[in-house]
Image 1 (cartoon, rainbow, N blue to C red):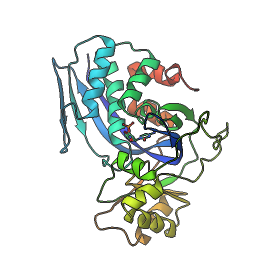
Image 2: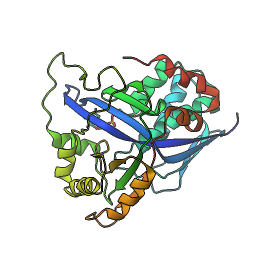
Image 3: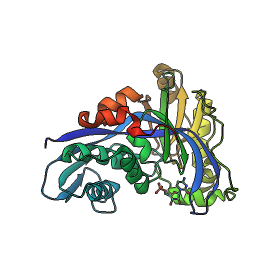
Image 4: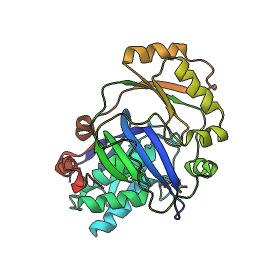
Length: 304
Ligand code: C5P
C-alpha cells in the first residue's frame, strides 16, 4: 500500500434548471457542472485506524463527508477502514462550489486505490449518490450534465477555453434554506429532464433557477452578480445554491482587467480568476493511476 495524493477540484454550475419538487423532498434538476482549478488536496496513507486531519476548523468525525465516504467504501468492500487522511482545504465552504462533495468523491477514489479494493463502477456511483447529490459528478469531473437530484451524470465535451472570475462573499448559504425558500411547485407526474441542452454539446442555457431564492436570503448576491455583468462578464451566475457567484470571460486577460472594475461588493468578498479543468487534466490530477481505466470508461455508466 503506497500513499495516494489527489486534488479535489471545485465546480461551478454553468446552468441549473429546477423542474419541480419531488415527493421525497428533493428537487428534480437539469444542471451542467464544470470543474475549475481551485482545489483541496487530500493525501491517504496506510494506518491501522481511520483518522482525518484538516488544516481548517472543520469536523474530523462523522460530521465530515470524508469520514462518511471512507466508512461507506469499507462497508462495501467488507474491510475494516484504516487510513490516515490529510485534507488541505482551499475551497470555501457554504459557497455552492461543491468542496465537501469533491472531498468525498476524492476519498472514494483515493481509498479504492490505497486499499486495492475492487468495487464495480455502478456501486461506487451509488455510494457517492447516497453521500450527496453532487458527489457522483466528482467521480467524472470535466463538464457533465446532472439530472435527477443532480446525481445522474452524463459526461459532456469540454467547452471552449474561457476564464472564470469567482466571487466569494464573506457569508455562506445553507443549501436546504435556499431550496426551501424557492417554494418550487410539485413535480407533475411523468415530467422528466428538460431537453434544454438538446442531445449535442450545445451551450447550456444561461440560467440558475436558485438565484431568486438565494437572493431573497442574501440580497448582496444580486449586487455581486450585477457588478460582474457591468464589468463585462458574458455570463454571471450563482453557483449551485450559492453563495459564490462566477463570471465568464473570453480569456484570462479580460478576467484580470474586470477585477479592477468590480464595484459595490460586500466587504470581505474574495475574488479569484480560475480556469475550467477539462476531462484530461481531471483524470491526471484527481484520479489515482491505479483506477484510471474505470474512470476512462465512465465507470460503465455514461447514459441514463
Ligand atoms: O444531496 P445533498 O445532501 O447535497 O442535499 C442537501 C439538501 O439540499 C437536501 O436535503 C435538500 O434540502 C436540498 N436539495 C434538493 N434537491 C436537490 C439537491 C438538494 O432539494 N436536487
